[in-house]
Length: 393
Ligand code: PHB
Image 1 (cartoon, rainbow, N blue to C red):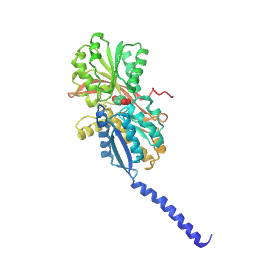
Image 2: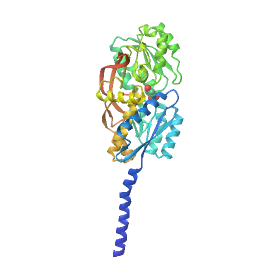
Image 3: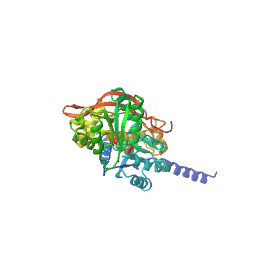
Image 4: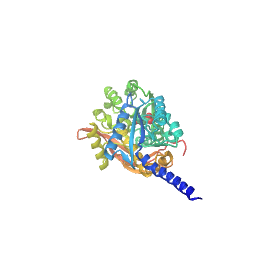
């Protein structure tokens, strides 16, 4: 090698090094983009609002820079319509070059985006939808919400063991409603309970009146109800209007129907309702007390279970970025999330490294008045509950 070519190659190496070294600061200035796809309008808007609020609150508390990179949220409203979700996810991935897609207010929306997460090798953080199969639809899906199997199996056992013998079921007629129904039924009937009637109502604008009217005559010990977040208030209003609260027919279910977001406006008809769920605004931990106070201060009302999933979802993204040193390679991020453990306002949680699904405590709660307000007061805890509803084990 002549002196000259030596210099040249040294120079070339120098350039290569400079480019390599320069790449870090250049990308450090580039923001990490999170496409947040939520129903901000329509029947599921309360879910979108809660998650958006919680993500904003977290970022105010923790700052908007992680591992040297600024976090940019691109919020898009899909109205919970899966065709919109798909189109929006595509646009975000192709045009905006987002590093994460997140949100997903209903199961069909989460499922619609799954193939795009796989193709783009982009983490898809499910912050709301609760059907078991969701995490099986893409190796890039990680869930911080819940599954209906987690809560419905537990309330099924509880009902059978607590003197409830005959139950009529009312479930929203789509995937999570079917999960809720099937897992409740399995456990309740295995414990000796009997299902006397099964009614499914449409997801959009359900009318509960005909079911409630029949219940007055049929007089089961309890009605098992799954309606998605946002619909519980309407259900309880109709239940009370028909005097069912005075009929001795109890309401049981996963906690969606008693969402803290709406609970305090349901009136005394809700008192005594027992549900199984992963989050109550009355969860007595220091962290939850702080979370509830901060959320109330920022937004004027208490957080519901959707807010908590959003808060944990953005936390998981922050922590994954810390682990990868700010790198946004999808496989590395998903690997960083697998097995992650942290304390949430709901209690201790983790991500199952095999299924990428949330592992969390499920609490049995009863609606009681505390300082003049209605709360789901937890009285029994099932620790570290995994989803039992996967098709593949
Ligand atoms: C869902 O669509 O998966 C879903 C939505 C709201 C809930 C539960 C499940 O409260």
